[in-house]
Amino acid sequence: MEQKGILTVISGFSGAGKGTVVKKLVEEYKYSLSVSATTRQKREGEEHGREYFFLTKAEFESMIEQYGLIEWAEYVGNYYGTPKSYVEDCLAEGKDVILEIELQGAMKVRSQFPDALLLFLAPPSIAELKKRLIGRGTETMKVVEERMQRAREEGRYMEQYDYLVVNDDLGACVEQVHGVIQAAKLRTARNLELISRLQEELIQY
Image (cartoon, rainbow, N blue to C red):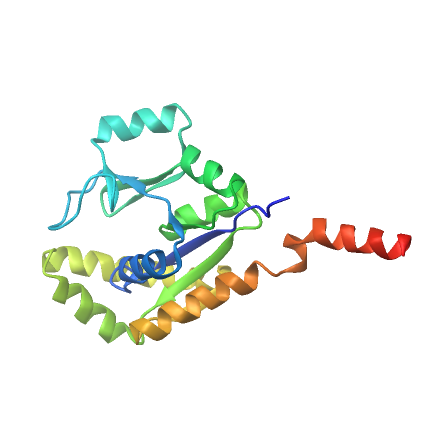
């Protein structure tokens, strides 16, 4: 029987490079990326259904009411959430799924998927984090400061994640994240069916 896929949640401060790391993981290792829904405005180069499902507030709230989301949260004035059916279908097919979501959502995912792998992506320093946020050129300084304030709050919860990876060198970071996911798939708790079969064969031997 094919092993069920592993669900990996990647969180991190805004500006830590989550999107870039996840894009590389999907390109190089063919992970299935769960596309989140959001009410925030599209940034230049983004497409509906690729980076996010860009919804109106009314559309998003309708999904909440119909229990169509694994998790959802409000972040800096916008909704973000994870559509349920895509994730469950991929895992059942043995595909490894990556969710790129905020801390609030990660904790909700863990409550529904106890064997999910939670990974926090951090910058090499907070000074570098602010530099990256300003360098994006997509937000006002007021929003940058809001994101830095949010990072201060999120920093208190980093210990709740299974692993922390620093995104200093992109290539090295992607390799480390991939290595962590592959190692997690080998946990004995995820291979109980194989263990049981081998033990039964030993009894019969």
